[in-house]
Image (cartoon, rainbow, N blue to C red):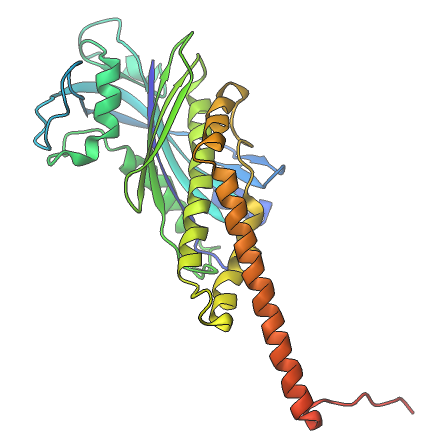
Length: 338
């Protein structure tokens, strides 16, 4: 079985973290369906999954032994029919994700079936024809290079739906603590018994990432949760690194302090890798901790941010004391009570 999906991650447009009660209201996307919430180790809220019916095509990668075709799409495509699941996820009351995923399985009949067939198998899509698993994986992860994508399954649009819907909630004040870009993670996982564990994370550009997994038999929703966990931590790395780059470190202590202080207030406490990853998928975090070493990079940046914030605070305090020494009349003397 092949499981594919896409995740959009960004900062919630609100000045502070939502309380659990506010998060529960904001994440209620499906009428009559509740939300799931966890308090440890970081506050986490997930909406109920929503199903989207699709009848479209998926791009194929090259045949075994051949190189990738150009953007004209000479590798071809296959028609798929079924349903895609989506949900919104909120981490720490601050970090919003829109997630879409589906499992691709072989169909027991080689023709288009009535919708009742697909609705009875939620979160699954079926190719009309042979299931070419590896070619589907390669084609999906590299679909963005195709010039004509109008007929292809758009997991990005499905993931953006809950992502944007949460942002329309009236409770949000539209004043985030700082401005930063969102990221997109497109992922695919081969789910088979006795599969050799493998993980490959690639930074495509400033916004896009891709993830390839091999794992044993595990529910598609659990694979999606692991991908969401990885996506939110990769976004944290990207956001903090970007903020440090803007902080003029070593040039303007006051500007550096004001630029980095929101990271301490709103983001640095949210790092909890693997907290929402099933035990059978922990190997992915173990591999990424060895190389490239995500937590090592995070700790290095956190030390730098805290060091610059401490230095900035000390510098501002020193300047204040200097002003007080030069102008003692500005200091209000304590008046003893009668």
